Amino acid sequence: MERMLAALKALADRNRLRIVAALDGADELCACQITGLLAVTGATVSRHLAVLERAGLVNKRRAGRWIWYRLAAAPRYEDLLIWLRRATAGDRRLAADRKTLAKILAVDPADYCRRQRSNAGLACARTEKNR
Amino acid sequence: MERMLAALKALADRNRLRIVAALDGADELCACQITGLLAVTGATVSRHLAVLERAGLVNKRRAGRWIWYRLAAAPRYEDLLIWLRRATAGDRRLAADRKTLAKILAVDPADYCRRQRSNAGLACARTEKNR
DNA sequence: GGTACAGTTAGCTGTTCAGCTAAATGATCG
DNA sequence: CGATCATTTAGCTGAACAGCTAACTGTACC
Image (tube, rainbow over all chains, first blue to last red):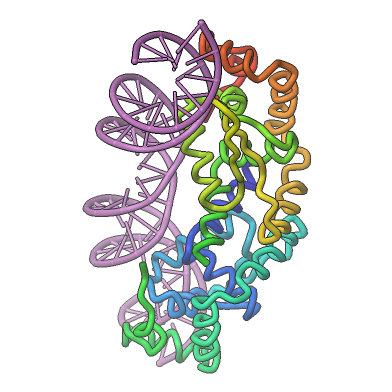
C-alpha cells in the first residue's frame, strides 16, 4: 500500500503529471529539457524528478554532464499508464506541451541547455503560465 | 486534466484509498460503517467522502437518516480501478480491513451506528492505529 | 588545476489539507 | 413540536509540500 500511495501521490501533481505525459511521448528527456517545458526552476524540476524516481515511475541515466530520464518499464504500473493515456487523450494543456516539446527536441540538447541558461525566457516558456 | 488530477488527489490518501477498497468489496456502505472501519471521526469520514464524490469516484444515496455510498460506475475510471485492484492484491492492511468490514456487515446497521456512538472504541477500532 | 556547466541539496515562504471539537442541518419518532 | 440521531459544515492546529534563491556536488573541457 505504501508503494501504491507513493505512486498516486507522485502523479497527483500537475507538473509531475506533465512530466510523465512528456516522457510517455518522447522516450528520453534530460532534466534541462523538462525544465524548459514546464517553465519552472531547475531545482523544482529536480525535486519533482526525485519524487517520480522514488515512486519507481521513472529511471535516470547519467551521460557525462547530462542526466536522462525515461519512464520505468515496470509491469506494476502498466495498467495505470493505460488509464493515464486514455484519461489525458483530449487534454489541451498536454497537447500544448507536446507542441512545445517538439520544438525543444528539434534543437541540439547542448545548445538548448546553454540557451536556456543565458536567456531565462524561451519561446516555450513565455507562452506558459503556472497556476 | 483537472478532473483527472482531482481523481488522483482523491486516491492519494491512505484513508480514502481504504474507503475505495472497502466500497469495491462491499458494494454499498453507510457513512457510519465507514467511520467504524477507519476508526476516525465521523466528521473526517464525511470530508473524505465529499472529496471522493466531487472527484466522481463515488455516488451517494439518501435513505431516511442514513446515507449510503457506493463506487461510481464511471467508464472513465474503469482502467484505474483495474489497476487499483491488482496493485492492492496482497496488501495486509486492506486484508485486515476486509475482515473488519465483514464483522461490521454482520451487525444490523442501526445497531452498529448506535453502538458506535455509545462506545467510542469498538473491537475493530481498538486494533487499528492511524499514521 | 581552474573554470564553466548540469543537476542536486539546503533553507525559506506560502498554501493545502488531514485530523480534531463543536455547532449546524436534515430526517425520524414519540 | 421537541428529542434524538446520522451526517455535514465551520473553525482550529500541525504536517506536508510546491515554489523560489543560494550554496554545493560532480563532470567536462581548457
